[in-house]
Amino acid sequence: MKRIILNMIVLILKIIYAPLKLLKVKNKVVYISRQSNKETLDFSLIRKKMEEVYPEIQNVILTKKIEDGIFNKIGYAFHMIRQMYHISTSKVVILDGYCIVASALKHKKETKIIQIWHALGAIKKFGYQSIGTEAGTDKLTAKIMCMHKNYDYVLAPSKITATHFKEAFGVQDEQIKYIGLPRIDYILTKDEQVNKRLYGEYPELKEKINILYVPTFRKGEKIQLDELVEKINTDKYNLIIKIHPLDIENYKYKERNGVIYDKYFSSYDWLKIVDRVITDYSSLAMETALLDIPVYFYTYDIEKYKKNPGLNFDFENEEIGKYVALNVEDLLKKIEEKYDHNILNTFVSKYVSVNKNNCVEELIQFMKENILMKGRI
Image 1 (tube, rainbow, N blue to C red):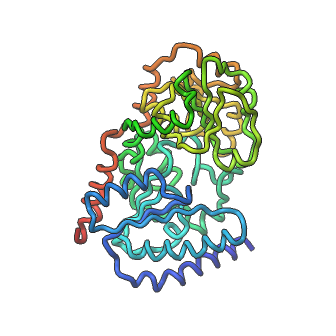
Image 2: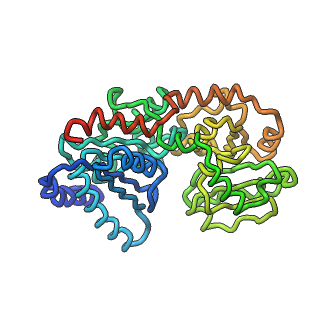
Image 3: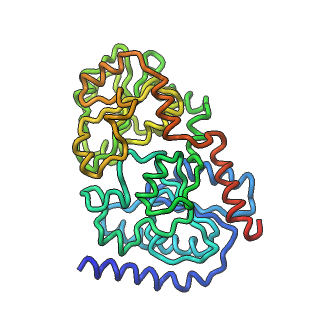
């Protein structure tokens, strides 16, 4: 039954898309994401630069999450028709995740799809790497829905990450382009206005050492926060906790002076002022290392993650594994010790080896030379 339903969905999409493919391709770039209901940081940085450098090129942002509920699903179905229209009339399609219509349908030759992905690395396995696991897609769905097909180019920040992306997306060496994510530009740029807003919202940040904790989204499982909140020395530290919106709304966490549960600023904003970062299986570790900020891995459930969805990152044998903690006591002990920044520099050089200057301009230059200049610009 599942096979029949999925095949019917794809057939309906093909029928709707057929007349749309007759429309003329324009000098247009469409940006599609299921990661957010608003324009993402990467998309915003590219779009603004495109509008500055090439105002004659149209930019269209299509960001919408697939949310629970029958009406939300129906709404997303109509949104997919918008996606099909803009894909059929665009020279460039930029994705930061899997897009059903981009992968399941056959597109015009002059339309090129660039997958920039929504993470700077791939500590957790995903895509074709995680097929068959509880957190991954089942093999039947992946096959019928053509998961991660049709990518002409995939951005990767290093050869190691490219290896993971080739496995996850099922792409070849020639499809990989070693260009940094646009967000690198934002991370490495000082912004006094952001700092002013952070200190304005949380004046206590000026009084202590600030530690940002960004745990991975765990799909409704209660994140183990209480013990860390109870035991951290709040006379010395502010603990800023950035929980995924779907997690922080589901649970009532322990309140304590010196502990901030932030809902207003992005992790990338926080990186501009924090002194330490705690994460687990997130590529935020690579992004933090770009700024030479000490990063710690609090991986209390690592054995589970090794099995589901699996890990690309060998925490035990990586040099930065020195800063992996399986419990709160060990984590707090490591935070008190002197940090070895040579290890951090080795880590970031290994996983973000691309040119880190003007990533947005480099991506736009690539699009200009390889896609946009093949027509009129």
